[in-house]
Length: 478
Image 1 (cartoon, helix red, strand yellow):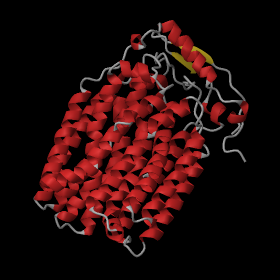
Image 2 (cartoon, one colour):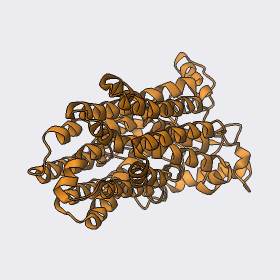
Image 3 (spheres, helix red, strand yellow):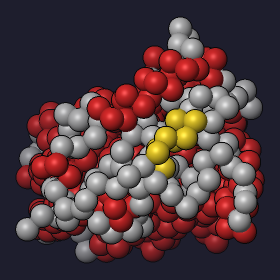
Image 4 (cartoon, one colour):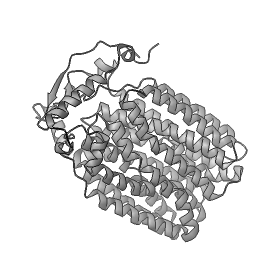
């Protein structure tokens, strides 16, 4: 039985705004999917929770894995760092394959489910760090990256009129979805049963992600929801509310290809800001539990601090997504990065003071600041460069995590070995403030930045790309 029911093609028209951007309107979500577009929020959300154990659960499992496999702290976190490299690095090539039709969303999700399951099993059954890197870091990282990138871009494509709240909600699942596993790893995970526990989680992951992925489908290029005026005239009560939201975060002036987005200078600026804050975020995820244990805090405080970080990290992503729709994406991003900087010094100070309640409070603040920026970048990229090439454009920006993963894992472990946690957290706080300063220079590119292409030519090319990217009848039927 097909996961995507067969639906008859619906008529549509193309609307062009003053910048020459084309909007494809007239087709409802049901006419394309056979069901409401809300499915493309809930299913990605479940899938993101399914793979969340990789990034947010590893630090809680790390001490048991060290003991069982005979790893050093540095070896353990280089495994996590290389995982982050592949998880982020797959986003651009996968996005390019998706946009050209070579890798449909469903195929990407099913491949991601299988690779993720194999990766998690590898860390259970092999002692050699090299083999684990090949299995957990390379296969598992690639699988988790396929799932992450596909889910995030799916939401942006189906909600071009309301990206912030929906993207934040889906992104949040990647953090708080791991909460049950954090407590499993802290209380019921030991060298006697760790293989069974990891294998069961791997099977669960494959089933959840695979089933969700079977229902994934992209909208047509340049699609815009029928009930929202793309020209933002606010002629009804409902569209007036949308008009206010779009006034704070206006749609991109054109559909930028990756090279055109790079030439604006704004995509490289986003990339560098994400390198900085991505490393800080992974530092907090990887080392908050080891820092708590080094201070003599009990397993409840250590697990709770990780749980608080994961939950607030996830809920914060949804909250700032909604806030950015009202306050503005860039302003909200700058605010979040300042909070992330403050949190690093707060965790350090409260830990050195051996104040457990205050430590948990700053774990709360760190969880918020250390993850809320991801959906803001994910929404800001299509705000600046359009939705048609978003899988590639966001893939380029998200590739910043390649370097952030190295800084926040293996190199951070070396810094802590040399300078202690005081040096590590102080450096992380300063880098977070630097990323906040960088965002002050972000500006939405003009249509004229589509170098060598007139507004009229860009509109024609965009319309042609939309027609060329339509699925065949067989694909549409699933």
